Length: 119
Image 1 (tube, rainbow, N blue to C red):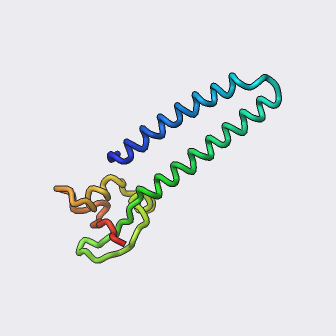
Image 2: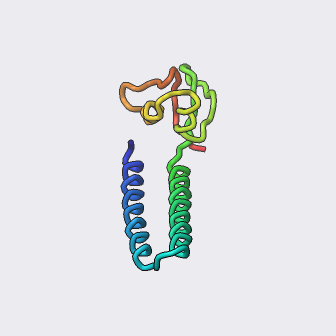
Image 3: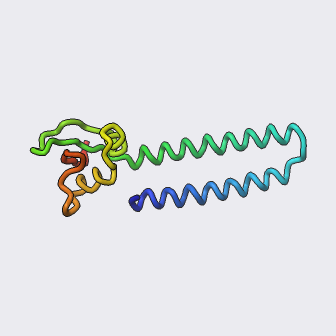
């Protein structure tokens, strides 16, 4: 997990805790009965939808395009993200990142060279 992912996870956890606290306050402020259940359900649904949208936006923002290359350096395919390439080719995304970042000792991942795209 890189620094951005760690920070995003920490922020997400803090937001979830704050929203849970808020939901608890709303629960205690509302009266019992059917109306309470309907309001609680709608608030829970809104929170869930909000988190899903936020996570997708964060993932899109942090995605970096990578170029899959042959061992001779010929471009094979442009991938929208390391995650996409990782899933389709069954290669660990951290290995792709290490190669694309030119980390010492990492020349290939899954039998390919990798580069970050500037496109």
